[in-house]
Picture 1: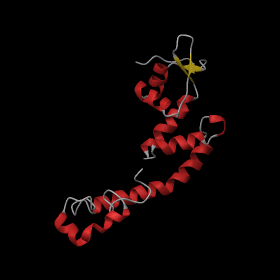
Picture 2: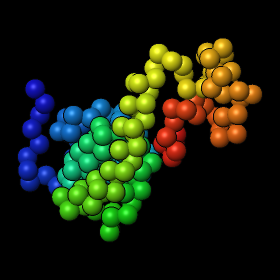
Picture 3: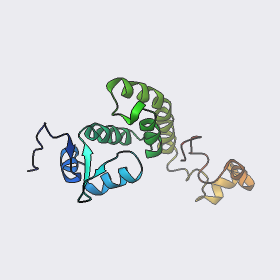
Picture 4: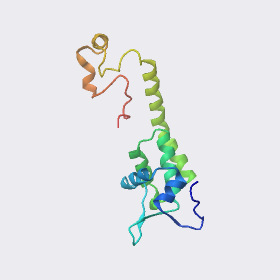
Length: 156
């Protein structure tokens, strides 16, 4: 059983943050390197995170769970005044802004599901069929990868 951190503690060690958030220490270190969370160092060079980092980590995890790339999550967190913890109002605003991206991802997944047995979307695994659908590799002008199954803007 994880050790309970008293509520009067303003800061958490990386182990305490991992135990409370359910996120591996290695992931927390990665989030810190990416600038998503920050800590201070003690005189013994140990990380100490503000308790509010728990909410930032929850925000990151929920955002990832719905398919938002870390780059976009980082942009959202950086846009908050004073690098503060997201509020419910922030979440509503950001989730509405991300809804179009999620709709496009759903569209892409439905297209993939519907055409999964046809081909790879001109990447190309079915040369015989793709000669008909993509004669002379015309889709190459649109960019790399399976162009028929990619939704613009979702490759990154």
